[in-house]
Image (cartoon, rainbow, N blue to C red):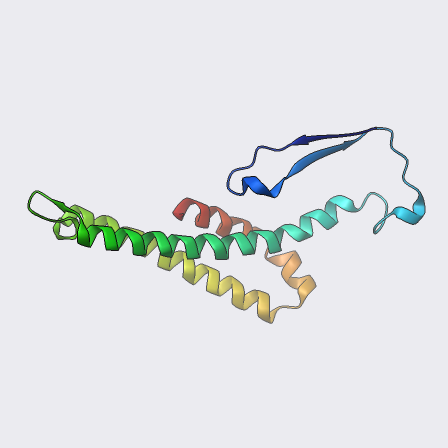
Length: 141
C-alpha cells in the first residue's frame, strides 16, 4: 500500500513535505511519468532550481536582517552611547555585511552561469556549486 509521514524540515514548515512509501503498489504503464526507474534522476535535477530559489530568498532575508540590526544599533543606547558607537558592535555589523556581500557575489556568479549555459549543461555542471551556495546562504542567514 501507500504510506505517508510528515518530514521534519528546517525552514519552510508550511510546505507539507512528506515521505511517501510505496510497498507492492502496481502502477499502470499509462500512468508512468517518464521512464520506469528514472524518477530519482528526475527529482535530483529539480533540486538545483529549488536550491537556487532558497539562495535568493535567504540572501534577501539576510539583507533585511542587517538593515534592521543597523536601525536598532543606531537607536539603542548602552553605557551612555548608541550601540553603533561601540567598536565591537561596528565590527559585528561589518562582519555581517561582509558575509552577505560575498554570498551575494557568489549568487550573481551562479546566476550568470545559469543564464549563459544551455539548460542541460547547467543541470549537469552546477549541481555542486548550487548545493555549496545553499549551505553558505543558510549559514549566513
